[in-house]
Length: 280
Length: 280
Image 1: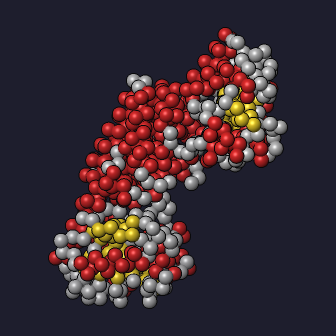
Image 2: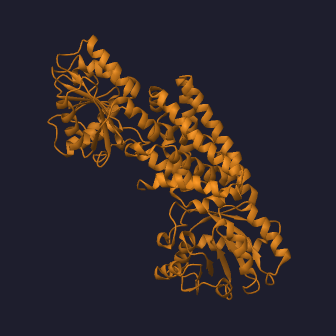
Image 3: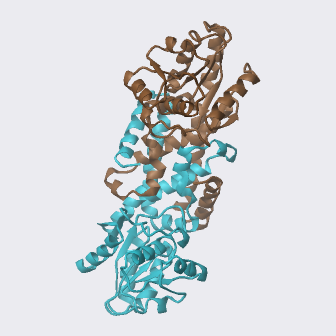
């Protein structure tokens, strides 16, 4: 298995593979020698290289864990240098743009014979970054979405599902655009709103924050450079989701403005019912 | 010490007093026999009663931990039935309305001779409720705001500060209106926004939620009946804070709409800086 990008996600994949003895060799490919040696030191990879083409030369599976804006480029580089019949996947938080561009790219080549891309999105990131936060159990009990396109074979779906399942995840198959609309609501919109809460909090009041503020703003600490790419790659669905939360907020504001206690309690109750459908 | 309302906060005060051996007797006063017996079973109180007047008859300190909308009524009832010179405090999440009304009420009476009210707000609640979630360490390392008015003596401030400090809290003294503006930003606005996120998430996408959604919406699971009262009691500051977050969200939306990656990354970075000023 070759892992392109050994940060939180790539490093955790490597650790999980190593701990479970699932790969003969785990090649870590990256741009920065420090990250690579950190990943090797943690036991997340067995060999490292700064050269993507060299790193994927013997891979049976390539997992591209770089930022959303670089995934297409890295998949194409890997596809031109890996063995024939290699399966390539990724770990990007958006899928439609990536899958569409790669389906096109595959037709134009030069991809090695029989190489296929099948997108993945492990819903397991957090506000931390870097291999030092990698954990062998990061995927345990988590959902990984895989997004077959028209050209994907059932055999590849099954193989990729087996890969993520072996790391402890639960795999869901979805169309890429359906995935993007869903995560706009469950991840990208909340991210923007969490950032808005943090930005709207006057610094002089920060001493009076407690659990509520800390929870609601936690993801605002994530890496802006990564999230800018995610949010723009899923722009249409993100804007649609933003409209929905703006509408919900306007309804709450209206009830507060009108001092309408019954309506306010009803709106809070409806929100609580959605939240209570999940655990803590 | 008499505790009126033995839910999460009242129960935790009782437990903390009991564990530290800080009170000879801890009287739990409530409306529901089950909550009272639960609190007694947990060791949070040494004696219980459904009769507020009887419960405060020998108290040196009364702590009113009922919902915001009932605090004024319960303080006045306690003030008319407790011994002379008793200090009464509360645990309400808003302060200006309560302090103002009680300063008026004290002038009209009938309060026992020398009885004073001094407001408290322990920033230590969460989305849970009921004595079964009470914890002796709930206040450890947490901030408790006390809100002296013009008529408050330094001796009372010191005594109340000692009380909360003995439970492990760090006490901050603020004017009631200053407190209300601050918690509108750090607690009440985030609460409304968390509810809006939950309400704006289509139920069919809930299987694709991960840490970010769970964190940002956690407080939306809190009790609507309690929060409706808090939000309306602090209406003006809540609306002002809502305007601020709406402005921040509009700026983020604008950057996404214009595909302005640099601006989006800058806004996310500014939000991250606020968030990074605090821990996880």
